[in-house]
Structures are given as structure tokens and as C-alpha cells.
Amino acid sequence: MSYATIDVSVQDGTPEYRLLFEQGTNAYRYTSRPEIISDGVNTWLPAAMKTTEVTQSSEMAKDPVSIRMPRDNALALTFVGGAPDDITFVTIFRSHIGDDVVQTYWKGRVSGFSISADEVEIVCENIFSSLRRSGLRARYQKGCRHALYSTRCGLDIVNFGIDATATAVNGLEVTYTLALDSNGAVTNSNGTVAIPAGYFTGGIMQAVDGMRYISSHSTGTLTLMQASNFLAEAVAGGPQSIILYPGCSHAIADCRDKFDNLINFGGFPWIPSRNPFANEITGSVT
Image (cartoon, rainbow, N blue to C red):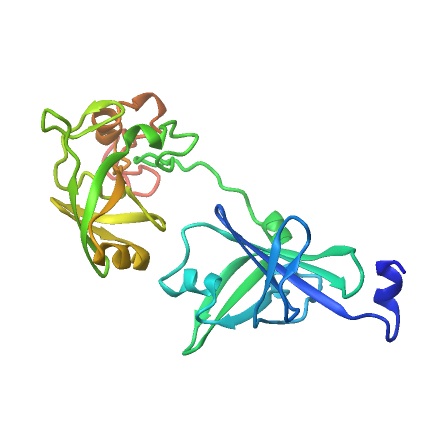
């Protein structure tokens, strides 16, 4: 009996749902069945999840899917410490018990989440909703408009990584020491680097649980935009290796002196500070 025949029958269908969450290089697979399911390639784990009905209307933004799960679920834990660094894509598959055909039922991505005492609720938007958004446009501004280490920026992040060791974590603050070469200098792929205070502000810290953005930097201390609970637990057992990538102020001086990347500078630093079309012009013509 085909999937379509079972699906439209009055009593023969026994729906089964499989949920795939893709977060960067990590994948979480769950099934609505009470036992572990293997499709020959992947394993789907049983999980206590409650999913709202999939609906379809003329406005995709009004058709979200909410998924509730226990707070101690492996996927839920990635949201407990704050929003994950990577976009979480969601695919819901539907099949019927006893039938080998599995259909893609719904696809989207996580757009928000909330945490209560014992559960996490993630809200997902339809993947096609992004097609109705306006595309990004270049801005005419003094500072560089390119994201650091992006394609338009042109810098390869690997060439600017600096090895370091995290020795303590206190909330958003990470205490670290830099790795030195045989000459006592700090180096990356481009050579010797001087590390003044603020060098890593706006940059990235790569730790055991992924990357965290650095909001400020002073000598020996980083302040992160999002806490790293995994790093805090790891450091409690001893110092942990991390990699630090410098940040950029998006000013022409940083682009030239810090990264030697002036050819890709995306700003217009000589824009007049006074707009003649927005200020009154007075005076005599004679």
C-alpha cells in the first residue's frame, strides 16, 4: 500500500514523525515513536516533544511551528546559555508505522525561543519566508560595510588565529594567557603580532563548544557577548586551549595597519561631515 493511500484512509494510517535539527556541523535526530529507529544510515532517538500543527495560509510569517521539549534535552541545552552561534535548521519528516516511505513534511529554521522552569520552546519559521524579504544593500558610510572575515572582506580567518589558554571563566569573562614561540613572541600565520589592549575587541574566541564573539578585551581578559558554559566546566578541570581571532573597528586605520587589507576596505571615510542638503545656507550672493 502506498504512502498516499495510507495517508488518506480512515483507519489504516498510523503517523510517525521524525525531527531533524541541524546546527552548524551538529545534527540532532528525534522520533515520535517510543523506541530507537534506524533507517540504515542514521539513528533517530525517542524524545518527549510537543509540536504544534503545521498550517498554511496566504502569509507565511503567520504559519510558525512551535516545538516544546524538556530542558535537559541535548538540543534544548544549546539554547539554555543563549542563542546558538549557528542558525538551527529544522526538517520534519512524516511516515506511517509499517511503511518504509518517509516524506518531507515541513522545513524551516528557528527564529526564536523561550525557556521556562523545565522546558524549552523553540519557534520555527517556514524556510520560504526568507524569499519574501528584501535583500541586503550596500550602505554609503564612513566605516567599512563588510563583515570581518567575510567574502567581501577578503580575509581568511585561519591566517589570523592566535593560540591561547583559558585559565579561568567567570560568567562572561575569560582569563587567558597567550602562547609564545621560542623567542617569547606572539605569532600567527602572518608572523609576529603585537597584542595591545583592545586587539581582540569585536573578534572571536574559538573554544570546545564553538565560537563566541568578544565584546571587549583588556590585557589577559576577554568579555564575551555570550557565556560559554561548556568552557567554564572544562576549565574547572584544568586550563583549556582556545584560539583567538582579532576584531576590527571597521575604520580605515584598522584595515590598513592591523590587517593590511586596504584594497578591500568597504567604507567611504571622506564623506563630508556636514550635509549641504540638510542644513540651511545663509549669506549674501554679493
